[in-house]
Image (cartoon, rainbow, N blue to C red; front, side):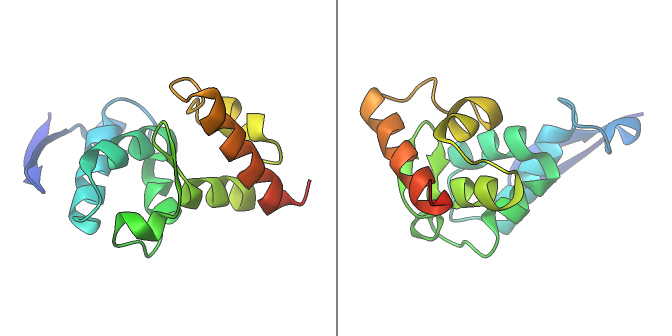
Length: 127
């Protein structure tokens, strides 16, 4: 039986059997938690993080409190903070690891934005 609650102005329907699985039912729960914990970060940036990282999205964001804390915004919803997380925790070593394999953020980006991500990833990995 669903349980409905409101967190950070978002109505969330919780289904107890789905709380542990990475499915469509968990994203609103994670998003509500992120909105509560990171009120200064726009929901339009938190939503894709919740989809990509699930409950680990708060680990990606860490102690960030503002957009500036997330570092450079590359476009496509990708920030330096997320790239750093992917390099440090998800074994991203090449720009394609970040842009296509782990996030798909390269899809809406321009060629120059993808080039900038590539330069950033190489600076972080020493490649």
